[in-house]
Length: 76
Image (cartoon, rainbow, N blue to C red; front, side, top):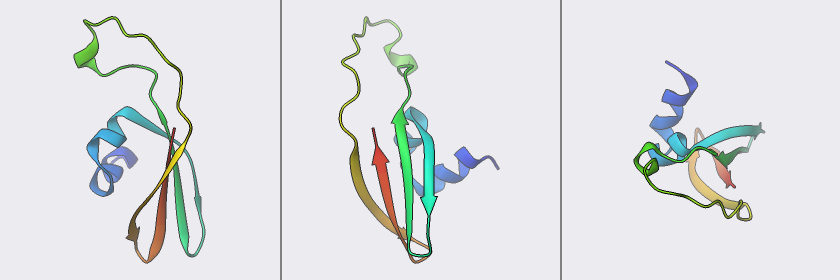
């Protein structure tokens, strides 16, 4: 099983498919996962002309605890 397949068990498919995990930090109490949006749009948008507006500021979402650790998703 690949790391991506494991992430799909814990996180929404959309997040795993359209964002890349760029880093993580792990302590005894907290897990931080850092995501950045893929630069390639989803295939269903291939026929449209898209204009990039750049990245928005990073947001942080507290997710459900995992194995007793707080989980924070940092999404950019």
